[in-house]
Image (cartoon, rainbow, N blue to C red; front, side):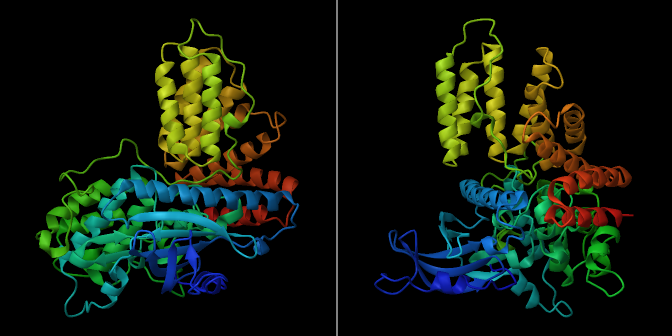
Length: 560
């Protein structure tokens, strides 16, 4: 349940009881008592404790972001302001993703009971998460305790474990959540053989994203032996990355060995990026051909060539001897025996390099004249905008989305009013990291603005193109993202506003990452060199952004 490194100071501040507590024990939220430690890691510490209000044992995970003292620049520098702003955005996104995961109520995800945040003595945020207290063993312990030379793990049991993981991923990928760190240590097998996937949301806190920010290139989330080629290269991370990691895990479940090991003559990163995975059937006899083909497909270098979590599940289930072998559920949902495919290929969530400027925070626009009296008055729409802003300020995007969906329906008979509300809905979906829906809606609204006769350089058109492009990139759709982002860069005016130069820079970095991920290395490097000149002019040669962009250029250059 814990990570591998040990953070300084977390144990003392979390386990020790503050003054005034009658029993000297630490409590979170005034009700969750810390009784002892279960494990610790580089970004988290896990305790067992008690919920004194509901009278039940709980697990309490304490998470910590980078302390303010580790910010590498002067307090008033543009770079420092950007990093601190992003840390706050990460905190809110972590809490939001935990709530989203909790709403799934999947049997393969530990139940989330509560979450909140406090301040550390140095001013940095400390987040806590209260979860179901699990009793069982990690998959890492199961593999380490198996003698693969004399009695390897039964094929049916390995298939059942991997099928349950695929079932969880099928559900979370549907809502644009990517785990990013599937590995044996993050999988727990509880009584009865039920598998639980741990540590959703940790990746967000550690700076993960579909498109890594320049301030955090070296903080790519994942564990190197299980990381996909695109993770090793700092490229777009989507649901396909989870499938690659699950492929590495399944390979290890079946053989006791990982596909790749670090070697003096060939680094682990280079092997994941360039070396074909060894056939699993060459490492263990008796593996059915369909299982060997599945593992090979999951370990494909090109993300588009990997199967979906649903497809993985459907191949594995027939290989399970029976429900008693490992408790495999009837379906990814664990309910009706069927896999429910996602409406859209999902991706991971990542904030753009700069904080997202929600249109609701800007002054109201002059509206396109309506052809008829709208069902919603201007006053009603203005009130709706105010309500949405309050909800977003209080980090309640699901409620805001519901209100806007109702508003879009009520204003449907007036095309102009409906268009305005649809863009507000797209912006709110983007704010909530629901990139699949946001991108397609921004795309459609931008097209409608052009049909209304607005010029390509009009701010409304450009806003739609920028967010549609970033959204499509987030969910791994380069063919849809690249035209939108190129359109934006071509028509955007860097003197149009304070944020425009940063948006242009972000769009160009995203274009380069998408080009690199689709095999257009030379074009990607040329784009990044142009961005480097922009960064040098803004932040200087010693900035984190310039140093990390250079690392990104070096990584792309290593691709053959």
